[in-house]
Every structure is written in C-alpha cells, then in structure tokens.
Image (spheres, rainbow over the protein chains, first blue to last red):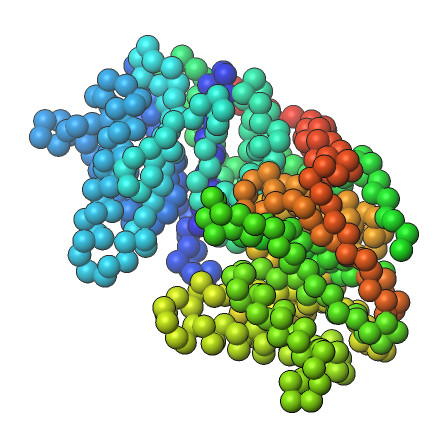
Length: 246
Length: 246
C-alpha cells in the first residue's frame, strides 16, 4: 500500500507521499513515490504514484526518458503546451504500461494497476492538480474538491475533510498532512516513514525542494504524540451525553 | 456497507450499529443490525451483524427460532453454559448459512459473507465480547484490543484508537461512538442514520434498552457540528511547522 496526498491551496500546490512498498508484510522496501520535472521559468510538474511498483517505475522511467531523448521518443511532458496535456500524456503512458503486462502471461489485470496524482503549472496557466486512473482517464481538483488522496486514503481522510482550508499557509498545510499521515501510519503497516513533501509556490515556475521527513524527525514526533492529547481535549470539549435512566 | 462497534469497558459493554443496507447506491433500505436475547438474572446476549443481508437475517432467524422451539431444533444460545459456547454456536450457524448458499447456484462465495460482533454475559462469567468471522471461527476482545469494529471500519478508527479508555463512563463511550460514527457517515454513503445503541451494565444480567438515534437527534447534530470546530482547535493547538527557506 501507499499513501499520497496532493493539496491545491490558493497560494500553490503541496504534495506529500510515504515511501514504503511491500510485497507481503515480510517483504518491505523504501522507494521514493514523488518525482518532479521542471524547466525553471517555464514549467514545474510533480507526480506521485500508488499501486504496482513495476508499473509505476516503468511509467516514471518512460516519462523521464522521453524528456531527455528528443525526436522519435517524444512526446515529452516537457513539451506539452498545458497541464491538461501533461495529465493526458501521463494517463496514456500509464494505460500503455498496464496494457502491455495485462495482455500477456497471467491475466491478473488488477495486480498491475496504479493511480497517480499529477500537479504543476505550465507557462501562463493556473497551477492544476489531477488524479489519473489506471484506465488513463483523469479528474481535476476543483474548489469543491481541492485535494486528492491515493493509496490507503480512509484513515487520514476525516481530518483533511474537517481542517483543510484553501487559504491556509504552506506551513499549516504541511502540519495538516503530517496529522493525516500519522493517523494512517498508526493504522496501516503498509504505509510508513520516511515521508517526502514538496511545496510549489503558485506562479514561481520554480520547483520546491523535495524534503524528507525521517522517522527520527523531532517535529513529526511532536505532532504524533501531541495529536493524541489534542484529540482527547477536543473530545472532552464536546457536550456530555445524558444517558436515559432505564 | 455497515458500521458496528462493540466496546468492552470496565463497567460493562456498549454496542452501536448503523441501520443502512444497500444493493447499489440507488437501492438503500433501513434494517436493524442489532439483536438482543436475554433471560433476566441469567444471561444477556447482543449480536451485531455486517455483510450480506440475506445471510445475516438467516443467521439471526435461525438463532432466534432455536431459542423458542425446544427439542430437536436445539442447540439454543439461551442454553449454552458460557459466552464462549454462545460465540461458538453463532460461528457455527454463520458458517452453515454461508455454506448452504455458496455451494449451490452461483459460485460467488464472497457475496454471501458476513461478520458479527457477539457480546454479553452468562451467569457467573465475565462480560465478554467476540468478533465472529465468516469461516465460523472467532477472536475475543482483550485488554490490548478492547473493542471490535465491523463493516466500514477505517474512517472511524483513528478517534477510537486515540480516545478510547476502558475506564470511561457509559455516557462518554456513547459520545465517543457518535464521533466515530459521524466521521464514517460523512465519508461513506453506505453507512447512515438512524443509529442503534445499547449499554450493558456488567453483572446486571439485565438487558439495556436498545436506543435509536434518529437523524433529527439534537445531541447527534451538536456532536456532528461541534466536532469539526473542536478538531480545528485541536489542530491549531499543535506547534507550528517551520518551512525551511529555499
């Protein structure tokens, strides 16, 4: 499993992903699930991946190769005229890769599946955020649904739904994501530290650094420990229930 | 889908279940998923069910019939000498019903599956709480794992993990369950109001009333609205994240 979240804020985009991959609970590894391509001043594109690791690595490698070798190996995501076209190209590549493996050998289509979050900005366009399905089609974040989650989405969703605000600062958004990831990590062994996160400032057309939060990160530990106490206080602050005498 | 939780407190047991059943999002109904049998002064047994409705209704009807007609239709859960034997009988009945339908017609075993929470007290025994699997085997709640959830368990789990305390009062436990159910209802259309809950006082050997929380319940509405604000305050109370300048 995996957990990745992309938020669309008024001031830009923010991405967070875990790094655990597993083939059974006795076979876990650490892989980066966040990739960024950029042409400073022109475009920034970040992709996060969930699902079959062979599929997601093949898609990322194909996309990356095509940004380097020109000519016949195009089209490249660095040459698409808009984020919509970038999402479309990522979707096509994902469908291709899944199709190649699903059509031969074992007929285990589901096992090769993957979903992706693609966000970024191209030229004069707005910063945009997309969720790409294994079928290659995709949806875009809107004012009504300003964030996407992929992988193990359920444990960390209630706090996002309640506390997310598109006007929040990047620092608050990172804090919110840490709470959401902490709830997920506490409940699902297949989501694990370290975490990667990246902040993209709207209209900067300059990629934010991909930061890594290791398991000994003091701030993450403070959030993880403090959130339990904060939740208990929040719970205590709600009015008492009055049991009817029987 | 469904959501049911059984908590084992030091002062007794508490059960809560939703009432929505669905065969597709365009075909929803309301069914009680909580049943209670008792012989006052001798035993109290409560069962909550999740999964295929035909299966769970058949199991409940069989168990109920066997408590009424004696002789060849036994064994009855009202005659078992301990909660362990009650859980064992419920498990056997569940496996039987699933087996009957899975072995003929469509080979869609999974579609007939169901899980159950069984709790109660028999005679001198302690109050006990069990989770019954479709295979008929079961596990018991312990000090390490003092509650069970069935159905759509993920959204409502983080608050249970963080705020549950076996020393809490029945009133606080009902409040906690309402928060957990509210988070689930907000995220999954297939879990819905009204909710049923029952409190069992340890060693009373007297069944608590099954109370119903309708969608216009004032207290539930207060919790539902108040929890969002309380969560935001809890979130604000955590220390600020400091973004590194790039």
